[in-house]
Length: 405
Image 1: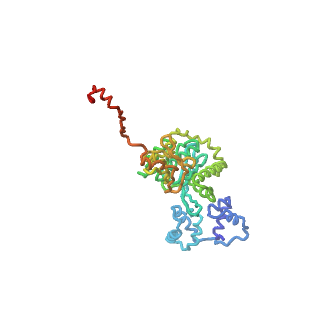
Image 2 (image 1 turned 90 degrees about the vertical axis):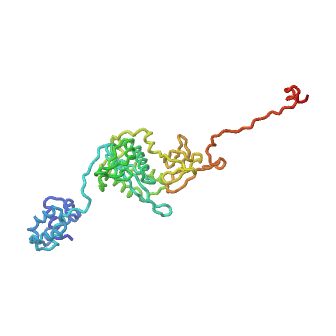
Image 3 (image 1 turned 180 degrees about the vertical axis):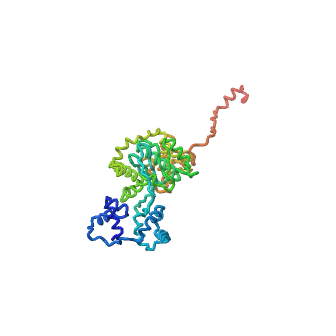
């Protein structure tokens, strides 16, 4: 039940031509409540006081509110100093419609031109395994500003290598590179600030130069400046993950891309257009050469003495003969591939439990026989000469019969 003053205010605004929706928004009530009191017959209006002790203080009250003072205890003190002898209840009732909402400051909405910007972010999601244990998994998201085409990829960690790999995969999925990529102040991208200006991680800066985009960072403590990515993270948590069943991270990522394509094949709630149909109009920059992209898909590792390669927190086996060598590792179609030059040393099904050790079949074959040496020591070789055995008479003839003379 609304107070009489509020009911009167609703009817006054309705007589001024405002709709129930506009009145409800202005007074902080539902449009149905406003409509109820607008449509209620005026034959039996609620009893109201024709005159209020507050009337002659309203100009002063509005002046105080214009300075951001809405605390009724403070307002009451100021009004009493000016001669007001009424109570605080009527004051609260009058101030309530003018009180600002308790929310973040309003921000201006920007629509991004095609090909201009993509926004990216990490979100921490959760899943349970077959035993019911709860696990965390980082989700990388990127969304194009104009078309709203989405890319989602789950990873084992949020380090720089994982970020670069996910971004390269996203650009390949989009078929091009936007001019700007907007991110928040993640440590893999920003190492600090000086005089309010971001100091970029040099390795990320080199990555941006190689791929061909300009990195942008939103203001500190202002995540709403990259609201598209923020909403996409929440969209993944609320719409994609609940009830989802998957075998491993590779399977989850396949399902995530299928979900992105299905969502982007429908009209977007804000633009009213179908994102996948708008992708061609984005005007993205062409992808860099494959050699540049592969540079960030591959990671260099040194094989340990026991023939293991560490990748995403998991140790994978290679033939022991390559211990101590530098190899190249990549994640491809749910498998970890390990190369030495152009030679594929091992291909393992990717594992996502940190600390796991995955051996290669026949990894240590021949190790004992060769005493752990991949190649023999470089050295000389001693050979025994063959001595010809001759009869004594031959030597006798050579010496002119001296031996038997």
